[in-house]
Length: 257
Ligand code: BV8
Ligand code: ZN
Image 1 (cartoon, rainbow, N blue to C red):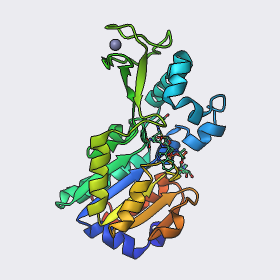
Image 2 (tube, rainbow, N blue to C red):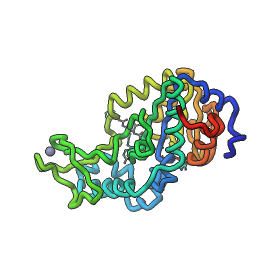
Image 3 (cartoon, helix red, strand yellow):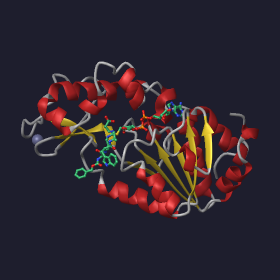
Image 4 (tube, protein in one colour):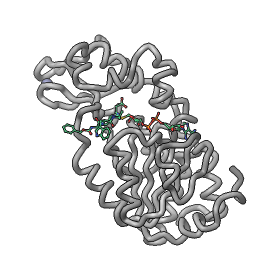
């Protein structure tokens, strides 16, 4: 998407907004080489059904298979690098905060790429592939860049299987993270919804909450989603292209204060 085709009203709002919130999904990491969840159903995770594996029941049934799947994803993430979309979100944070505004990046992603791109104001609604804890005594496990095999890794303290610190289907989201996200979208002037199919709740419900609170919402996504029809703006395309164009059109080549 060329910068000159970005809506003027969106650029003006981003330049002046007192509070900007961003909700990201796996699409923002796609250009870093990390399969999206939907690709995961067809991508190289085709051997595993993520909705099958990302549950406490799957872990209880076969902790070795589940922990191997997550450890493979963790190690793959370590080989990937943040892309231009991640970097643009870090710049938006810098510009908004630099002028005294409030910013929060709410991510469903568990890959840690936003942090590696330099974003600071982040809440991880679905946890992280890089935090593992004992399923018995909750002791956290120190990770290295090599495989955690033999699977499942065992807790040194109590011997129980260690699990990835992600939120599985059927599990509650981290209370503080979700509360911070809800509070932010209710006071934001602008919500950028980037790279998410809007199918997973309650994260997707943050878009409804933002709209009900009068927040202007802009979707940046490769394809339409259930929210497309109710967005103020829909920019169809790759996050790694559109976000940098949006930053350039709003702030030129000036870097954040
Ligand atoms: C809970 C961690 C309650 C694990 C994940 C209400 C309505 C309906 C269902 C429910 C509901 N409430 C609860 C549910 C059930 C369930 C749910 O939502 N199911 C879905 C499948 C219908 N939700 C839950 O279970 C949640 N828990 O609500 O608990 C509760 C109540 C009482 C007691 C106990 C509990 C927990 C949900 C969290 C699950 N964990 N992740 C892991 O990663 O393995 S969710 C998982 O899905 C990932 O986090 C991932 O982020 C997410 C998928 O969503 P997206 O990120 O959007 O990814 P997706 O592939 O779908 O889409 C990518 C998009 O990007 C696409 O649109 C594509 O076009 C676009 N794209 C691709 N490339 C690019 C791009 N866009 C731009 N640029 C590109 N380059
Ligand atoms: Zn333990």
